[in-house]
Structures are given as C-alpha cells and as structure tokens.
Image 1 (tube, rainbow, N blue to C red):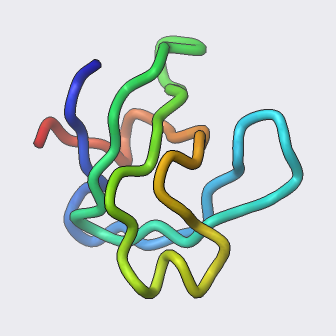
Image 2 (image 1 turned 90 degrees about the vertical axis):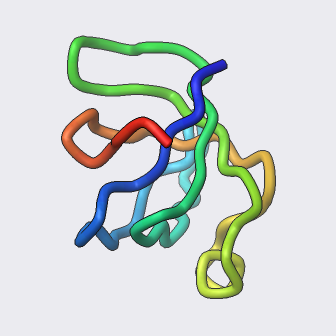
Image 3 (image 1 turned 135 degrees about the vertical axis):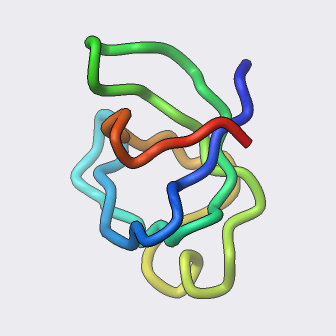
Length: 74
C-alpha cells in the first residue's frame, strides 16, 4: 500500500466507501492507498486520525473515497 496524505490547504468531508457516513480530513492526514477507482478517484484507509477527524466521524482504518487532486505522496 502506498503512503499518502491530504495536501496542504485541503480540509473537507470525505465519503466513507460503501456507506453513508462522512469524515472530516484535514491537511497532513495520513492515508494508505487501498485501490484506484478511476484516473482521479482512490479508495484509501485513514491512518492515525487527528482528534478533529475523530470528532467529525473519522476513525482509524476507515475506508474513504478521495480525489487525486487532494492527495500527495507522504
């Protein structure tokens, strides 16, 4: 799995893959690539969520959908 993180300046709610839940992910949040859905969309696993992320629905191991423009290699 590739190690990724949310790009600087990005803060937003991301959809949980296969569920109707969302999580707040902020810049620097670490993610592991699970698989590619399309050229611009990835399925990623949340790693060590921040307190702010946890307070807004996120948890360690949560699978989320993320667009490539919001990601950078960690």
